[in-house]
Length: 585
Ligand code: ARG
Image 1 (spheres, helix red, strand yellow):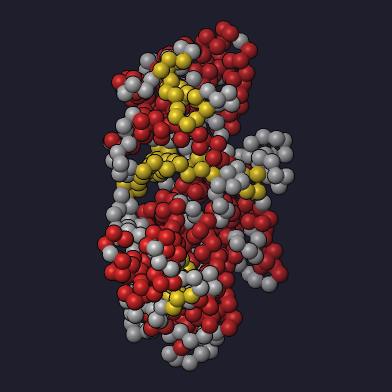
Image 2 (spheres, rainbow, N blue to C red):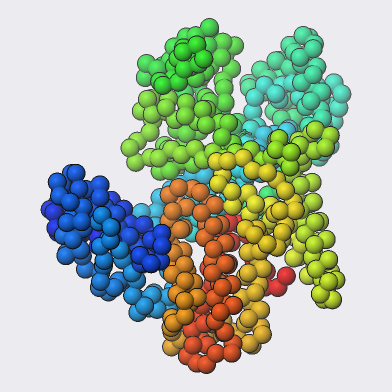
């Protein structure tokens, strides 16, 4: 089923073509939701920009379009306002039928994509032997939400973890561990990731200070690259160690990912060089092989190079990404490649995408998208750090969110003299704590930095996870109170709209499909959060003004259906954000 907005768009475009001829096929009808309910529900603004092109007054154009516009099954007769806006108001009948249908549909009327595609989401992607930091947390939460939405729309989604599991740092680390803790290189689980991070820091220090050590580390890299058995085994152990630690975070956050680290693309790196050479893009610069980027210059106005192979023969982060991009297009047959990383990597991806395009590796039907996000800041407005100035461990952060959620809950229970089992308390605290962290991240426009605040994200008021979860629980308590089974309201049950609060809620419910479409296109999860937040708000107003359990039939059933629709919409929306709901909290 097409959303109302899509149907209206199509009809306005058809009317334009009927009025002015085929050459106007494909014109954007500029249909938006009306800014003020006084003007109806939707507004088509296309007459204004067309005035010049067609050479008539916008009002006259609007009249000609309206004369050909048949929306009588959906809207009241269209009205023309101001200089030439076409105002459309949805018919009550139409709304009632749509909502009743939505209620019968498991997908709540949200259609699947007409052209399902293979889409690849590269997200999370932490680095081995380093701790996952809040930047990776953002990538994990945002990437998972995007993947969930694409999956719901019926796309074939590949969730890839481009783990940083290769590079010169392993030479350093292995050389150092051979000296101080050789067991770590031969025995599984001999290290904690915390130790690994410490060893890594010390190894780096040795590397910078001691030339002999530097040489040993280089030899380890050579051994690793040539596949020497003991070095490769040591490398695998280190990766396994980190992997286990990452998995703890993924389990806490309920994240599924396919690991395909940088090392996977190793065998393809020499081809990147030869193929770029053959394409005539590669140049020598200070002994390195580079591609000079078009439209990128440094401070001195010199063209900026993307380094493909360093003078010592080593490859770069960008080289691996070029190989990965090609693999994703050619072998994985991805049609939309999405990369979720901090905004600091925007330049990197712009460069990689440009080189891939110029090399002819990107067919017209493939879209490359970098999805950048801002920094996580502390209360002081600077990059989030521990008091000691270290990076915050994600596990500690998530544990603290759950702990605080538990304390809040216990205080609330005591205040209301409620008794609950320890299992209930633990479960609610877990869901609330994790959801709070996810929602706080997703509800921000991702391109901006945001301040991390436990107090704010755990608050029961405002645009927060606890508030949303609470709204859902409230819908369920209505069912409990009235002894109602929402799943069994009768096949004949119909939605009937009379009060203002019902209309406002109903129209908002019907926008779900449009919002999900928008997130699918723009990859901005905060749009879905805003939608759900407004939904709770509209539901609460409806519930304050329209008695549900105390009203007479058939209004009672209709209002129960609105409660149920709200509940299911909240549940679906929150699930798409990676958040599970609670019947009681
Ligand atoms: N490992 C990288 C980092 O920690 C992120 C990788 C993102 N994905 C990619 N294909 N480059 O910054």
